[in-house]
Length: 140
Image 1 (spheres, helix red, strand yellow):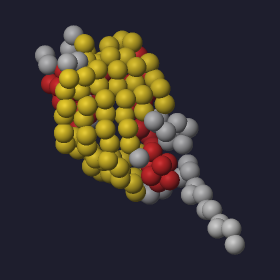
Image 2 (image 1 turned 45 degrees about the horizontal axis):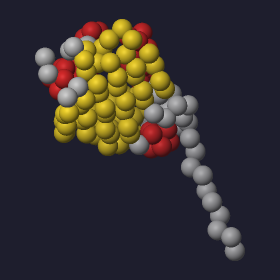
Image 3 (image 1 turned 120 degrees about the vertical axis):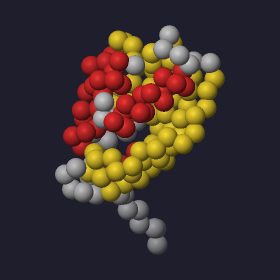
């Protein structure tokens, strides 16, 4: 199976809420990187299927995604880069956020060995109430 097809199947499974299907598409020692730790509570570097399962559990605890769309897929050998957008809200406060995103995937032998996400973590952290805006006063 082509790497881009593996990635598309992962997005389809995520869209259905089928995390066990997502986990079946990653290697036992996958590296899963999501930026923003510690300001984004579900972010961090995780290893293995248990780490990926923990990522999705933490995401579900903190965030309700109201929109998640993959728009553009770019491939080069085992690498797939996807551009998209998301909207969501904090499950506890209802504060909303939106962000464009990019995700990098490395696929070998039909399984993901590496995943890294890039998003507007500042907007997400503000909506989740973990970061307060810094006000800078102009020198007078």
